[in-house]
Image 1 (cartoon, rainbow, N blue to C red):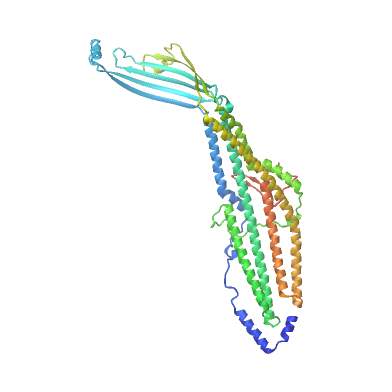
Image 2: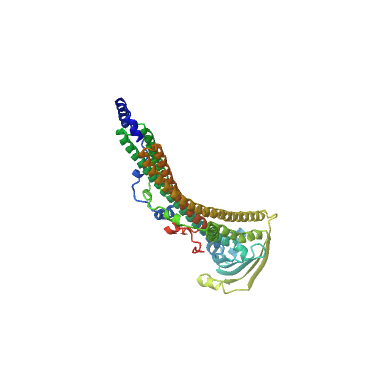
Length: 544
């Protein structure tokens, strides 16, 4: 070896000098700044992807908020239908009135045989019951029954009288509010909003699942990157220790250790950085899953890793897949379904707003009768409703009102029309972005598949080249720096390969999310299998 030949040419003085340098180097502190070790701090149970998804669906704050909004929308449906619920009214009243008498009235009563009468007392006891109902056609009815019993201390009118009244009233709108389409607008729009809120909740679940899957793959990639950094550090330590042995045997000059120590320090620093990145990825996964920082549910290393063998085995036709995914998304994306559903409500709210431009013209018809029984008590109450009826009471009236200018109705029409325009723009924007996103994700998947095959071959060649370079170095025809350079390139190739796996896993997740086929999402449960996450969509078997 040429280094050995160099040492053989040195004299004893030079040998002593090199020995002193070696002693000094070996006694220097190797590295003084400790770094965070993720593996040492996280020795808990492994974290599984499906468990994290389940936890996220149960605990995510956004899902809870949209569930609450869905409940509010359901309450809106109840409130809208309540305007057509019948109402029953009943009342009981008791009154006593005292009327003072003048001196002339007192004299008149004394002449009639009532010398002690100084005031008139009139008492009344009345009962009433009624029913009101507004129909979706706009017609309102209100039948009612009223019975009252009156008594007096008037000598000329001491017999108690019970009177009964039965009436039926009907109001028919002739202008504003005439027709079921107008009167049901609020009820219909509330039902549509409830259905749209349900779609929003499902889309939020899908977003949460997408986010937690991406966070999990990022955590798995960071963990793999940490392992690669640690393996690279081990290789650097081996080269350092092997060279140190050669230096101790005076086969290699001590200066070789400087660059090896620098390389090893760099590898240690890279391990520290990778460990910190892994911790950040774990915390991001906790945030995506909706758990607290000190939660033990997500604390250990990842248990599931994307099967890299699927990448080299997958093939796809980008145009056919993109077309199928877009068609599926148009039919199944919950945010798009909610946007389209909300457009339907304006079929009812805009005509109702225009109806408010009409004058309020109502036909009011009332019919009934009055009865009488000169007595009091329960029997008199029943008798007063069928005895002493002189005839049928009838009345009819037409009422009219119209606000001059009717600015409120005109403003409401403008508001509804502009909201319709905004809703159309939102639906069209969702469709436009879906088209672009799906095309981007499909091409990303295809690109990664092609690149991954090249990267596998690159890693294999770098590994072979490194072994060759080590042999050349032992033969003295290559420098130690050449070995270190190939060592770094191999580490970069391994890291790039894991990065491609992460990129592919993320691209499939994003593609399925954009197409609305990332499993079946529900607010109470999440029907999703691991196969739904790691496999490409099958254009021939995808559910329509």
